[in-house]
Image (cartoon, rainbow, N blue to C red):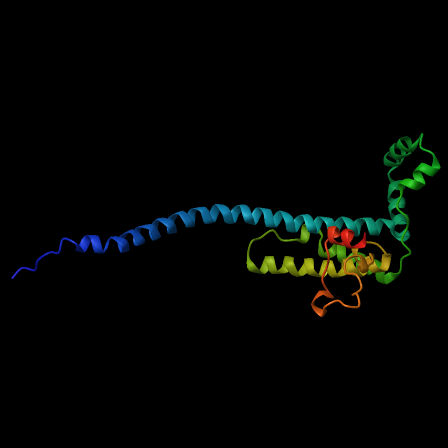
Length: 199
Protein backbone atom coordinates (compact mmCIF):
# COMPACT_ATOMS: atom_id res chain seq x y z
CA UNK A 1 0.00 0.00 0.00
CA UNK A 2 1.49 3.32 -1.03
CA UNK A 3 1.82 6.00 1.59
CA UNK A 4 -0.10 9.10 0.79
CA UNK A 5 1.88 12.31 0.48
CA UNK A 6 0.52 15.10 2.63
CA UNK A 7 0.38 18.29 0.54
CA UNK A 8 0.90 20.44 3.67
CA UNK A 9 4.25 18.85 4.64
CA UNK A 10 6.19 21.37 2.55
CA UNK A 11 4.29 24.27 4.11
CA UNK A 12 4.87 23.04 7.65
CA UNK A 13 8.63 22.71 7.07
CA UNK A 14 8.89 26.11 5.35
CA UNK A 15 10.09 27.89 8.50
CA UNK A 16 12.93 25.45 9.09
CA UNK A 17 13.97 25.60 5.44
CA UNK A 18 14.14 29.41 5.47
CA UNK A 19 15.99 29.35 8.78
CA UNK A 20 18.65 26.99 7.35
CA UNK A 21 18.95 29.05 4.17
CA UNK A 22 19.31 32.32 6.10
CA UNK A 23 21.84 30.79 8.46
CA UNK A 24 24.07 29.60 5.61
CA UNK A 25 23.77 32.95 3.82
CA UNK A 26 24.63 34.83 7.01
CA UNK A 27 27.60 32.56 7.63
CA UNK A 28 29.01 33.30 4.17
CA UNK A 29 28.43 37.06 4.46
CA UNK A 30 29.79 37.14 8.01
CA UNK A 31 32.98 35.36 7.04
CA UNK A 32 33.60 37.83 4.22
CA UNK A 33 32.69 41.03 6.09
CA UNK A 34 34.43 39.75 9.24
CA UNK A 35 37.75 39.61 7.41
CA UNK A 36 37.28 43.15 6.07
CA UNK A 37 36.14 44.58 9.41
CA UNK A 38 38.85 42.70 11.29
CA UNK A 39 41.51 44.02 8.94
CA UNK A 40 40.38 47.65 9.32
CA UNK A 41 40.01 47.29 13.10
CA UNK A 42 43.47 45.74 13.31
CA UNK A 43 44.95 48.62 11.33
CA UNK A 44 43.33 51.26 13.53
CA UNK A 45 44.26 49.51 16.80
CA UNK A 46 47.82 48.94 15.59
CA UNK A 47 48.07 52.60 14.62
CA UNK A 48 46.81 53.69 18.07
CA UNK A 49 49.34 51.46 19.83
CA UNK A 50 52.27 52.66 17.76
CA UNK A 51 51.24 56.32 18.13
CA UNK A 52 51.36 55.84 21.90
CA UNK A 53 54.77 54.14 21.61
CA UNK A 54 55.99 57.08 19.53
CA UNK A 55 54.68 59.55 22.09
CA UNK A 56 56.53 57.77 24.90
CA UNK A 57 59.71 57.54 22.83
CA UNK A 58 59.63 61.25 22.03
CA UNK A 59 59.21 62.08 25.72
CA UNK A 60 62.24 59.94 26.53
CA UNK A 61 64.28 61.69 23.81
CA UNK A 62 63.29 65.16 25.06
CA UNK A 63 64.12 64.28 28.67
CA UNK A 64 67.45 62.75 27.66
CA UNK A 65 68.36 65.89 25.74
CA UNK A 66 67.59 68.01 28.81
CA UNK A 67 70.12 66.11 30.95
CA UNK A 68 73.37 68.14 31.00
CA UNK A 69 75.57 65.05 30.59
CA UNK A 70 73.82 64.09 27.36
CA UNK A 71 73.80 67.70 26.13
CA UNK A 72 77.60 67.82 26.42
CA UNK A 73 77.91 64.59 24.38
CA UNK A 74 75.54 66.01 21.78
CA UNK A 75 77.54 69.25 21.49
CA UNK A 76 80.81 67.32 21.11
CA UNK A 77 79.30 65.27 18.28
CA UNK A 78 78.11 68.46 16.56
CA UNK A 79 81.58 69.99 16.74
CA UNK A 80 83.18 66.99 15.06
CA UNK A 81 81.24 67.80 11.90
CA UNK A 82 82.36 71.28 10.87
CA UNK A 83 79.76 71.67 8.13
CA UNK A 84 76.85 71.02 10.50
CA UNK A 85 78.33 73.37 13.05
CA UNK A 86 78.76 76.16 10.51
CA UNK A 87 75.22 75.79 9.17
CA UNK A 88 73.83 75.86 12.72
CA UNK A 89 75.88 78.98 13.49
CA UNK A 90 74.65 80.75 10.35
CA UNK A 91 71.06 79.82 11.15
CA UNK A 92 71.50 81.19 14.66
CA UNK A 93 72.87 84.53 13.45
CA UNK A 94 70.45 87.34 13.93
CA UNK A 95 68.93 85.79 17.03
CA UNK A 96 69.73 87.47 20.31
CA UNK A 97 71.17 85.48 23.20
CA UNK A 98 67.93 85.86 25.16
CA UNK A 99 65.87 84.46 22.29
CA UNK A 100 68.23 81.46 22.08
CA UNK A 101 68.02 80.81 25.82
CA UNK A 102 64.22 81.15 25.80
CA UNK A 103 63.95 78.65 22.95
CA UNK A 104 65.52 75.86 25.01
CA UNK A 105 63.85 73.75 27.65
CA UNK A 106 65.39 74.05 31.10
CA UNK A 107 67.90 71.37 32.01
CA UNK A 108 66.89 68.55 34.34
CA UNK A 109 68.76 68.13 37.59
CA UNK A 110 69.73 64.56 36.98
CA UNK A 111 70.91 61.59 38.96
CA UNK A 112 72.00 58.12 37.83
CA UNK A 113 68.64 56.58 38.70
CA UNK A 114 66.70 59.11 36.60
CA UNK A 115 69.11 58.61 33.69
CA UNK A 116 68.66 54.83 33.92
CA UNK A 117 64.84 55.21 33.98
CA UNK A 118 64.92 57.45 30.89
CA UNK A 119 67.19 54.98 29.06
CA UNK A 120 64.90 52.10 30.05
CA UNK A 121 61.81 54.00 28.87
CA UNK A 122 63.46 54.62 25.51
CA UNK A 123 64.59 50.99 25.27
CA UNK A 124 61.06 49.72 25.94
CA UNK A 125 59.54 51.72 23.07
CA UNK A 126 62.47 51.85 20.64
CA UNK A 127 60.88 51.57 17.18
CA UNK A 128 63.21 48.95 15.71
CA UNK A 129 62.60 46.52 18.56
CA UNK A 130 58.78 46.61 18.54
CA UNK A 131 57.28 43.71 16.64
CA UNK A 132 54.53 44.29 14.08
CA UNK A 133 53.55 40.61 13.90
CA UNK A 134 49.96 39.69 14.62
CA UNK A 135 50.45 36.59 16.74
CA UNK A 136 49.72 36.16 20.43
CA UNK A 137 53.35 36.20 21.53
CA UNK A 138 54.17 39.45 19.69
CA UNK A 139 50.99 41.19 20.88
CA UNK A 140 51.59 40.13 24.50
CA UNK A 141 55.22 41.28 24.29
CA UNK A 142 54.15 44.66 22.89
CA UNK A 143 51.46 45.12 25.56
CA UNK A 144 53.79 44.18 28.42
CA UNK A 145 56.47 46.55 27.11
CA UNK A 146 53.93 49.37 26.87
CA UNK A 147 52.74 48.65 30.41
CA UNK A 148 56.33 48.82 31.65
CA UNK A 149 56.91 52.01 29.66
CA UNK A 150 53.87 53.66 31.26
CA UNK A 151 55.21 52.69 34.68
CA UNK A 152 58.60 54.24 33.87
CA UNK A 153 56.81 57.32 32.52
CA UNK A 154 55.05 57.87 35.86
CA UNK A 155 58.32 57.45 37.77
CA UNK A 156 60.15 59.94 35.52
CA UNK A 157 57.30 62.47 35.63
CA UNK A 158 57.37 62.41 39.44
CA UNK A 159 61.16 62.77 39.53
CA UNK A 160 61.17 65.64 37.02
CA UNK A 161 58.01 67.26 38.39
CA UNK A 162 56.19 67.33 35.07
CA UNK A 163 53.27 65.62 33.40
CA UNK A 164 49.87 64.42 34.43
CA UNK A 165 50.93 62.73 37.66
CA UNK A 166 52.18 65.98 39.19
CA UNK A 167 48.86 67.79 38.73
CA UNK A 168 46.63 68.45 41.69
CA UNK A 169 44.26 65.49 42.02
CA UNK A 170 41.80 67.55 44.08
CA UNK A 171 40.63 69.29 40.90
CA UNK A 172 39.19 65.96 39.74
CA UNK A 173 37.69 64.70 42.98
CA UNK A 174 37.00 67.35 45.61
CA UNK A 175 37.00 66.62 49.33
CA UNK A 176 33.70 65.16 50.51
CA UNK A 177 31.29 67.53 52.20
CA UNK A 178 29.85 66.89 55.64
CA UNK A 179 26.51 65.42 54.52
CA UNK A 180 27.72 63.56 51.46
CA UNK A 181 26.83 59.89 50.91
CA UNK A 182 29.62 57.32 51.03
CA UNK A 183 28.78 56.29 47.44
CA UNK A 184 29.52 59.81 46.18
CA UNK A 185 32.92 60.24 47.88
CA UNK A 186 35.09 58.86 45.07
CA UNK A 187 32.96 60.18 42.22
CA UNK A 188 34.89 62.14 39.60
CA UNK A 189 32.99 65.16 38.41
CA UNK A 190 33.08 66.43 34.85
CA UNK A 191 34.51 69.94 34.34
CA UNK A 192 30.98 71.26 33.63
CA UNK A 193 29.71 69.84 36.96
CA UNK A 194 32.70 71.30 38.79
CA UNK A 195 32.06 74.78 37.34
CA UNK A 196 28.35 74.70 38.11
CA UNK A 197 28.86 73.71 41.78
CA UNK A 198 31.84 76.02 42.34
CA UNK A 199 29.89 79.10 41.20
